[in-house]
Length: 244
Image (cartoon, rainbow, N blue to C red; front, side, top):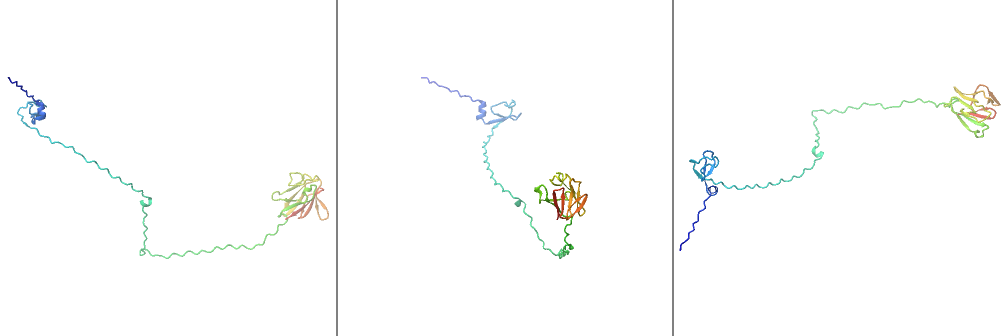
């Protein structure tokens, strides 16, 4: 029997693969300085011929281990500083007392000037003012008799300060109004002449009369009247003039 022999063809290796993986020889191009595998006859970089460039073992690059940097430690939290009050920020300045008496001599305090006591000025004694006389006091007219019964015994003040001339009559325009038909509208008037009280008739129809102690005497022009004098206006109104 014939033996069949099967020849296995060896698989050719790729020179480039062999140069990259298994081959460790390289040559350096003298033209451009690029490294090339030993299987290459031309420079893979510039394409120049290998010429007399010799191959040398490819240096084994050391494995670079990754560097693990330690994690940064977190900064410790600082506690907030307490706020300072005004008294803490600016401490009061200490008060310095000096007891050095050598440089300055102590002088006794100067005496205070004497002041004369206040004495009120004596007021000379004066007697009380005399009682008011006629013309300086206050006068009243007291109705003794009149047709108007409501006026009998009434007391009417005579104000010479407000009315220098006190008119008397039936008209409401007068200072003293007498509701008597026998009294004229403007019958008479009273005035002050210095210190004297004067009564004047104003040409009345039924006349003005002053009692003299015995009878009523008619007043034709002006006449002075004394306190407690009795005067009649017309025929039915009688008054008494009093003073204070």
